[in-house]
Image (cartoon, rainbow, N blue to C red; front, top):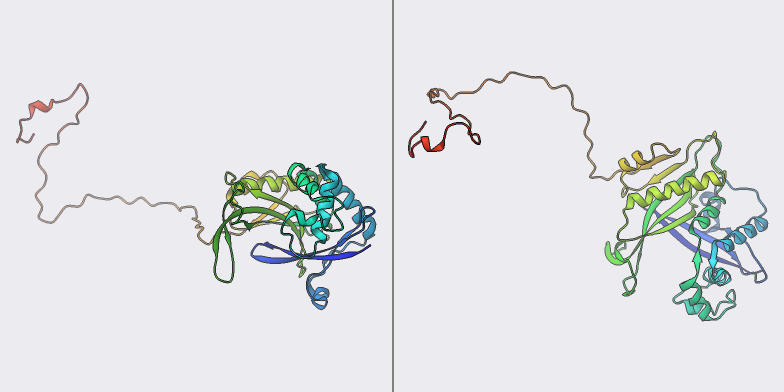
Length: 321
């Protein structure tokens, strides 16, 4: 059974979180997937090892995970599963789907790759629940912690791709806006100095989507999966969800008032808060008169009403009432 290290990362809450996977290249059945460090070994021991590691049989645990992953594919199941293995084990960047057919993990022609990507189907809810079920439990008296943020994927060359918007791409030469997609990513995070995250869901934002509504749907789906997988104990503190400044904190607090969840949102620097006004003291105000001014002695014209009151014709032009 060969092993390949796949390195990558997730940009979340303004920080780049390293992610790496060790993927088996076993051909005869489900292999195993485990996490390893993407940095140097000495730093891995000091800062990048998860604080709540579970002592489990890695082969049995990850074999069960791959079997569950196979069950999430509802159409073109075998082809999609091999495409996923080929993408993980490919050396370097995958530039076209046809290149995946050259990987030993994919035992099909390039036509099956395009058919799997075009007509294959994935149960998103089942995949998210499978990933939630693999979360490490929280330490005693500490809540499970999650983070939700958006990350851009620029695709300026995909002229015929649908639902593209202008996304902000940060770089050394300054921020630029390019056509592409934005994804709302949900990950599990932990306390301490560990930089590991557990990716749970990535949802593409359409041009008609409202950012706060998508975040609200992801939080409610996460709470449903925590209850279904028994990851949230009855006596444990409510799970903590950390959000960036792009969400409407007031709307989320109102919609999630009846849910067993804590929400921590970073406020926008332009946000302004006003306290409740105090009791207003009433001071009598007298009309001001100019010094030496002649007091008003003329009478006021009564208000004009439809059908009643004085007629405008009674007042000759140039005369005052």
